[in-house]
Image (cartoon, rainbow, N blue to C red):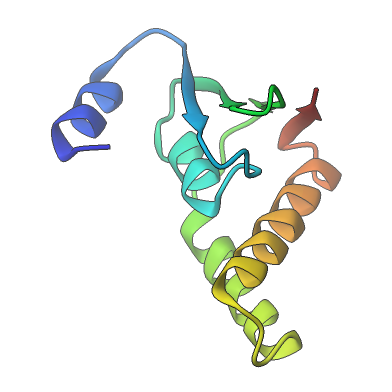
Length: 112
C-alpha cells in the first residue's frame, strides 16, 4: 500500500472494511493486523486467498499499542524458534498475535 493510499484510509470518517487478496493463500500477516489497528475507523479486514480461503478479522475495540505488541510477539518468536525460516517465524508471530487478540476480545477471527 502506498503512503497516499494509507493517508486516504486514515482520512475516512465513516467505518470501512479493509479488503485485499493473498495470491499465495497465506493467513493474514502482522502488517495486516497492524494496518487494521492503525486505521481507527476500520471495522475489519478481509483477506481473500487464491485457493478460496477467506480470513476475516472483525475489530471489536481499538488498541493503541499494536506496534509494541507485535514487537513483543516477534521477540518471543525469535527466542523460542532460533534458526527457523522467516516464513515460519512470521506464521508463528501472527498466529500468536491473533490468538492473543481473540482471548482479549479485541478481534473476532474467522477462516472459511
